[in-house]
Amino acid sequence: MAYGQILTALADPTRRALLEDLRAGPMPVARLAARHPVSRPAVSQHLKVLQEAGLVAVEPRGSARLYRARPRGLAPLRDYLDEVWGDVLQAFAEEVSRQMEDTNARPRHQDD
Image 1 (cartoon, rainbow, N blue to C red):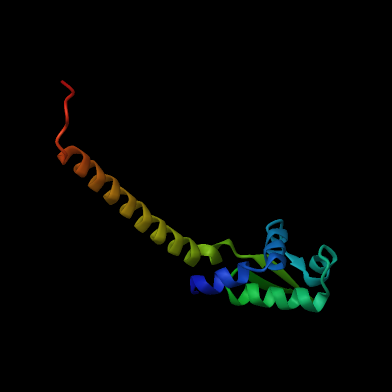
Image 2: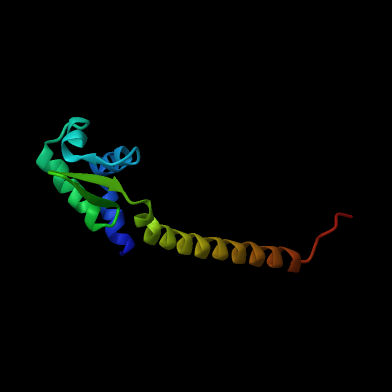
């Protein structure tokens, strides 16, 4: 799963709230819809986006479908952020090193 799809799914505040609700455990659409000011069809659509992004899984239970959070679905985003953060820290370390070398290479002036 590409990290871009995960970011897109998480960009919507309702989807983030639904995902937070699902951290407490599996829930059907009706229960999720009762907790938010959106219709059941809207909740279903949001859950579909989260499912396509790999952040939510569906478990059939009799006539109901329970949705549950998939924390492992965040792995591609975490990998991307780790890579970017690693690059940023490396660039910062190189810049600090360069500035220290420049400072140490300058002649020092002594006051007489």
